[in-house]
Image (cartoon, rainbow, N blue to C red; front, side, top):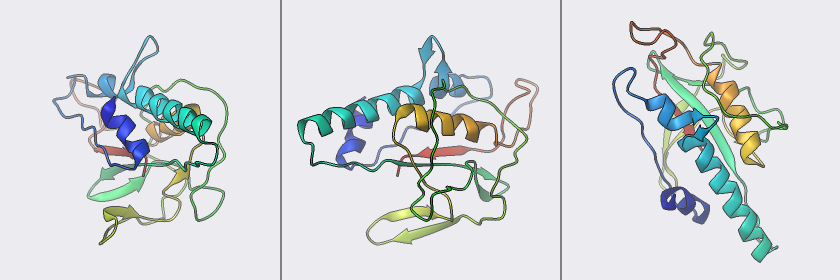
Length: 174
């Protein structure tokens, strides 16, 4: 939790799940309805902390953006639909939904957009591409996008797990 909460202060934090097929990576990150995993709990903590900070100091503003990509055949793929509100990555998603992992057909709305790895003296290494970052205003909105992105992942079943994805994915709140 302290790692997640440090992001509200502007620090970068990484949670990395690694292991054999069937070892519990997806369960650890996603969880279940009765026992949420790292991603839903982190999103809730981020927005709860932001809510408390803005109540204490109404003149303080936060901008929360997220991206969800996978590395498939040595190419980064945006798992989210291209942001509809313009170049700042703002997206308008609403409605409550619980995060649950899903693996789909690997298709997404913005297949033609190239994502590149870039480096900046001020930012460090980052991914750049049109429609990559979505502005989110609540944990529910973020988790709705995560669920949509999960449906765009490229499935490649194994003997241990028919819904497995052979492509690593990265969810960021940049």
